[in-house]
Length: 121
Image (cartoon, rainbow, N blue to C red):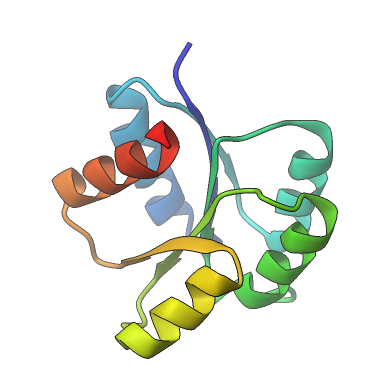
């Protein structure tokens, strides 16, 4: 059984594409389409990594990230985002518990390598 990854993205096509890519690499990938559904899944299941979109309606990725830190401290979270962060912002986010930030659009190989690196630690 592969490492478990939860993909959280309100864009169905993006979420399904990430799932397809990671499943092909042997990950056990689940998908939810809202922050609320992410928090429900996290309460009932364990994941090696949460790939979290930032720009979502109702509850955005930042809010979900803050809640995850409260209910499941130490949960590995990486943002899937169209925003490019400066090194200073990335360092601040790492201190707050974020393990990575993967910019959309991404190259499949980059996504795979980064997820493998995160989940192998």
